[in-house]
Length: 65
Image (cartoon, rainbow, N blue to C red):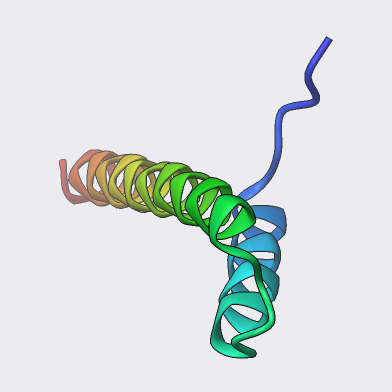
């Protein structure tokens, strides 16, 4: 069973992958996998941020009533 990650964990993994790719020492096959994983993490982070913004807006709307 795959553990659900948090935004902070996703960001940390994304930073690590970025550092590894920027080092220039990643072989091409591994590079493709790192890029795919990075794209997954970026999408996860975007979604999580959007959900958080929506929740904050709902809270603000409820307090203004």
